[in-house]
Amino acid sequence: MPVFKLTDELVFPHPSYSDRDGLLAIGGDLSPARLLLAYRHGIFPWYSDPEPILWWSPNPRLVLFPLELKIAKSLKRVIKKDVFEVTVDRAFRRVIEACAEVRTGIGEETWITSEMIEAYVRLHELGYAHSFESWHDGELAGGLYGVALGRVFFGESMFAVKTDASKVAFVYMVKSLLEWDFELVDCQNTTEHLKRFGAREIARREFLMRLGGALEGENIRFGRPVR
Image (cartoon, rainbow, N blue to C red; front, side, top):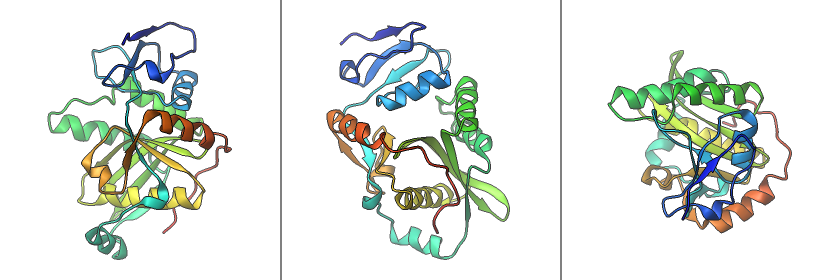
């Protein structure tokens, strides 16, 4: 399949044109308008310096339906002990920067470049990108961030510097989304870690169909998560 080269025009080819690995297009920019257009069409950016911006739409797609959330018994015990305080949108920049630093700190490449950080901070300022933070004794111990449109949360990345911190934030996030009538959590790429929470793969065609319906809902203001 061809990989499309984007121009300044705000348009994407249909996700069905993605190659076997899910790569759809190259180039463009990370402006809020382009990012939001991409998410609305089931497309997301994922690349590393010094690569150009790469746009993806995998098939199958890993998703989590909030009602299907699974919580391990050991994690339930941690949550019951109130080891962590979870907040929403209190430290977005710190969360996204920590997601990048954790990976580079162990010698791994990260797609969360400085350009990506500034782009998503801008989305946060516009009310589209959100973070869930886990705090331990007043210190940021873990968290995650993503983009919310309609009744869909597009998960981007998570980090933890203390055991179970990101897992607790993830559970609180899903419970909050369920309370707010969200229909879908897009996990993007398949990992065993997320599958243990109940995430499962669906065909891209089904994902796009569900996405279209869930985007019809109005964007809501995020608030304190449900405990």
